[in-house]
Image (cartoon, rainbow, N blue to C red; front, side, top):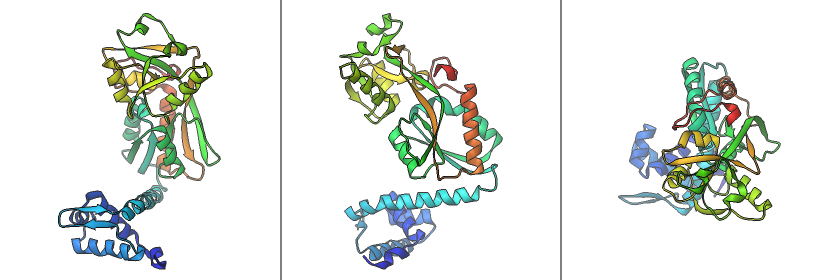
Length: 318
């Protein structure tokens, strides 16, 4: 490796990214509006600068080498930040056009955003919106890396680089099959979950971390029998009688099914904050600021569109 690495162009990096995405020089050439030999020259130039091969090539397959797998995340981050910066500059002069990127957990996107986005697009039809749905840990990382304008979610931790604005309290419910013994109760205490098979998100999720800590303070551990990555899968498994779950009202209102019931979780009656997070050093474009204002206003008036069978609840019930 030599000083030539510092002269790599964005065009070369986009060629490497496209070849990796499609596992094909021909498909990459089509996307980049170039000839296949031209793409090959760009990729070969990167490899020569780095002194390593980035792809295994054969007549049928193009696959990243180990060195390629190490280098590709850096390429993705560089190009994403560059694209975001260019879009940011292009929309600096007007809130009527531009591109806004918002990150949020799945529950927030499912429950809250459709009505808010609908109203925003009616008043800002030239603004394009990208909503990145992910687990809380991934949402926080995107804010830290500056690859999103802002994020919505429950954020237990922050640091001096983050600006966090609390919007309102989110309460929690026990979710279970309608034939479960909890159906005879008006509410459920945390202690009554001891020994129950739990259907849960990974340990990094806000709900799981809150109630694992609460159970530990009461001297027992929740039995996370099945761990999944999506809220929809949690409700599918609960509906099939595989276990119970703890979910926020954001999730409950958008996923209730005919064989699922819920009860408020009490003793302790716990809540978290639904907050807006953004990086302190990231100035919002006019378009991003307008969407942020629209989201905040929508949350205040309860402008939600539920996707489930439950009746919509206003902000005080979340």
